[in-house]
Image 1 (tube, helix red, strand yellow):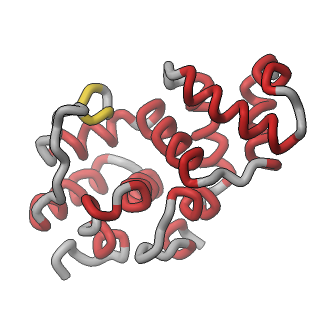
Image 2: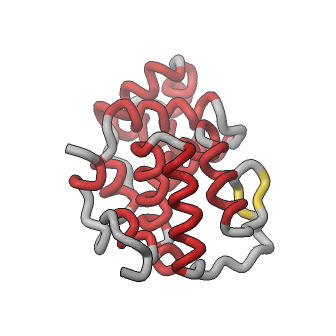
Length: 175
């Protein structure tokens, strides 16, 4: 069963998306926090969640190898929406920058390595532009990665990315 068959795009949250992801995708997201994203707050947030779930001290968890921490993440942690958002961001910013670049450049959204310029005022993109950019993504990036990225955008900001619902269902943004 594909990711898109496991989610309800009408009520999608970051934590629901996390639960629908494969173990491989969740593992990749966890490793991205520790290896690919230079943000101590992300690592601290994840270490705290792991420590709480396995009843270890945070300092003990921080000394474990990243692979071991990620295994605890997969087995013991049920991320809330904030932690799931952190993990989804780390996955995409840390490991899927080509995808982010194609998407954001296609929409004319200023960014630095996939992180949207904080001074940019995000607004819902025009349907025809969104369709064209998603078509380009699908031509250049593996379908599973595209589906996860679009679902992550929708889960984290349904107001801005509501046009993605129809695209995720296989239609067009305005269908």
